[in-house]
Amino acid sequence: MTQYQPIHRPTPTDDKAPTPPPRLALYMPATPPLGLIYALELWWWRYRRRRQFRQRFLPLLAHDDHILEDMGHQRDDIQWASRLPLKEDAHKALTERRARHKR
Image (cartoon, rainbow, N blue to C red; front, side):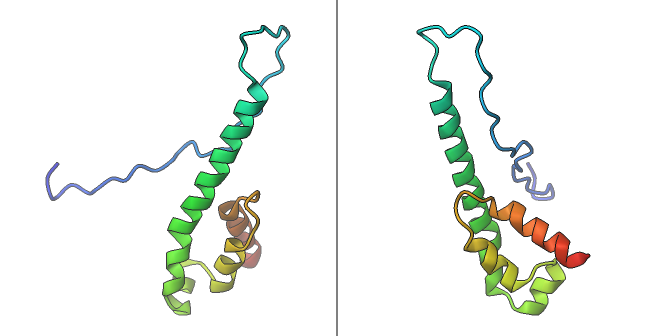
């Protein structure tokens, strides 16, 4: 890589919530507990999404309101989303709230 090539950061393209496990017609004794695996995957996904929100949006609060408006955000919305419970996806709630403001 040369200095003239842009630095590419990996962006998550498949950042969707995990799907529930399928119902098995035949349950074998060696089958792992699918409900437990799903619960752990869901917990890990929620933790990652909350961490990504904190890394991406909370540093924006250091800027003034005019710069935030230029970026399409509002300080109150970011602070509101940061206080949401952990079970709610703050990034998704923020984009929905921003879409309501644009109407």
